[in-house]
Image (spheres, helix red, strand yellow):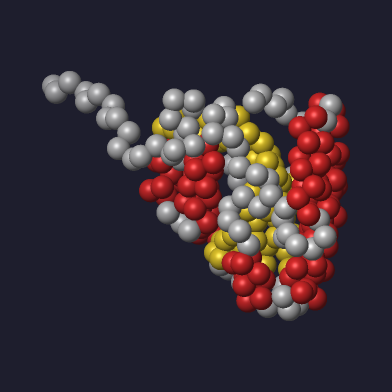
Length: 247
């Protein structure tokens, strides 16, 4: 009997930084490119999902990069298309071992073409040696459904800076100061008030998200859908269980 082969070393380039690992993951998921996951996640990475909506489902836990790619890329893209995922924060620092940020997604259903607009929180843990993701917890606070012409919505999403959107639909009166203040509030919030601060952040970001699509000519149906999202995010975020922030 031949001896079992030893594990082969990583053949995919490691990300230069934690921010690149996040960007590579989002590119893999949004564009249905599972081969990129090897450059974003460690082989033995762990994924945990906290879903606070009935509009979308995921397994609660996936162990190992292959299983994570099946959950977040292959399986995900069987149901969804026209996916745009954005992190509503500045990128993590170069040497970060952990990072948390709020996120927003715009996408459509392959089954009936309906629009989905959702949001929640990412909690990342990185391998300090090569910056790959060792663990990821995804909280889905809300996922709203809208039946409208998706063309102007996707045109709007396609114009947004990707994937880190510090001021979320900038230029509509928020300015850099507010985004920085909200980030500071979130970082300094007492453990039992983190959800409330996240809710405030999402509501403020959502207010600007309503204004820009209308300015770009999106339908009133979209505005209603995003307004519903804002309410859902606020309620969902208020009930989120804060996590320890190890940075």
